[in-house]
Length: 83
Image 1 (cartoon, rainbow, N blue to C red):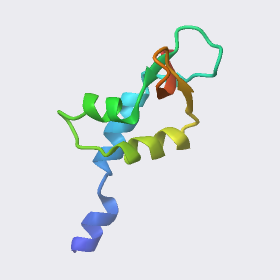
Image 2 (image 1 turned 120 degrees about the vertical axis):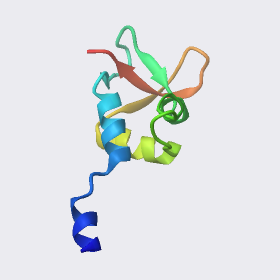
Image 3 (image 1 turned 180 degrees about the vertical axis):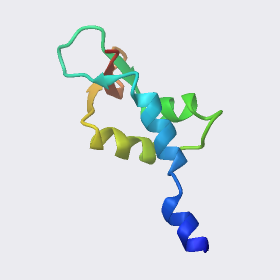
């Protein structure tokens, strides 16, 4: 019985991260109004709802087609846009 529950269990961490990311789209270099966020920034923003490691955030962003770029302070960050 325990195995059946686990098979049907929703990955709540992934679901929360996906819902958060639905407010953004991947940005490309040269686009205007790019929002730069680190994986830690995103994990911190969601920390009151779920504990995510930066590598969990990075894995999901890569799978969704996000790219890295340098922000104005020359820090490597994810490039995002609001649709």
